[in-house]
Length: 252
Image 1 (tube, one colour):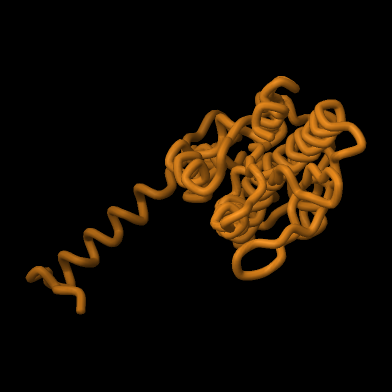
Image 2: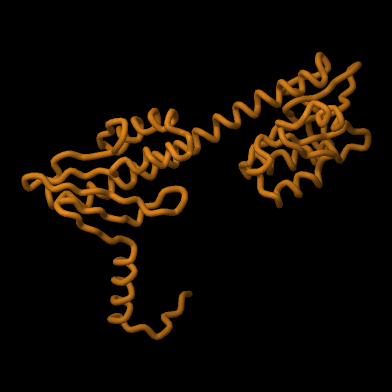
């Protein structure tokens, strides 16, 4: 149960009003207003929505801020595709630069500002997620190429390997004369991927007569250091997908 800490309703109302005001503020320049909203981009900065007055109506937009954010991440090519889909979802317009709504009435402004702010935020979030997926795809291709170069025809991808409790599907296995000499698992920074790999490889490593085990990270730097240590406890080696061929061979 949350304690009331002795606040009267009047005091609580004042505090609530103060918090509400702090979540959003506006700045006016001529016939244009800029409203900083409580909606945030992935980096934590508030989404700013622009209002332009025109003959009693308002033009509401994000002033191209989402597009600029994507450009700074080097993801303009991804953003263009994502933004069009987000605009449809939020029933707003997108003109290759800004999210906007035309001819908004005064009483419609709160809803219009909320829609534009959320569209702008979601578009950046989805762009970064798509960019991460692209990076993982490139890293996965590198993993396959490295394994192939290091072990040639001995490499079997998406192999099934026996552990102490069950059989597991692994990224790659090095098999010679029907014997599994080494197992490699490709792991992304996502917690679910890390947890799955730790359980899977730990079970394989616990076998009495077992293969060498290695975890190959899609993005070594983006994988939390604590998670890398956890992974290291379940396998013989943990390294980045972009590691040299010699490191792959040494792991086996």
